Image (cartoon, rainbow, N blue to C red; front, side, top):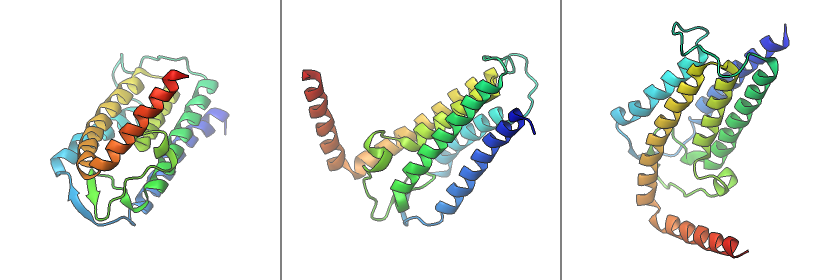
Length: 194
C-alpha cells in the first residue's frame, strides 16, 4: 500500500472512529427538558450532511468544483490528515468535559451544568471549532474547490446552531455568563495595561 493510499484510509478511519465514539457516548446523557424542533434540527443537519458528502464523494461531475486549490501532493495530504486528527481530537476532549450534558441537538438537560473545564476554558464552542478544523483538514486533503465550499456550508450550519445554543444557554445560565463576561473584561483590561 502506498503512503497516499494509507493516508486516504487514515482520513476515513478517523471520521469513522469519531462517529462510532460519538454514537456510543451519546447513549449516556441526562434527560432533556427542552429541545429544538425537528425543523430547526434539520436546518443544520442537512447542510452539514451535504458538506460532508461534498468532501467525501470520490468524484463529482462539476468542472469548477473539482478544480484544485492546492497541488496534489503527499505532503499536503499528510498535513490534512494531521488537521483532521487534531480537530476530531479536540471535539472528543470537549465531549469528555461536557459529560452527560452533551446532546447532538440544541437542548437543555435536567440538572444542566455550565462547563468551563478542559477546552471550554479556552474556547467557547470547542466541538464546533474542532469540527470545522476537521472539515478544513479534509478539504485540504481533497484539494479541490468543493472542499472550500463544503467548509463554508459547514461553517454556516454550525454558526446557525451556535446562535440558537447561545440564546438558550444565555437564558439558563444568565448569572454564570455575566460573571464570565466580567472576568473576561477585567482580564482584557489588565492585559491592555501591560
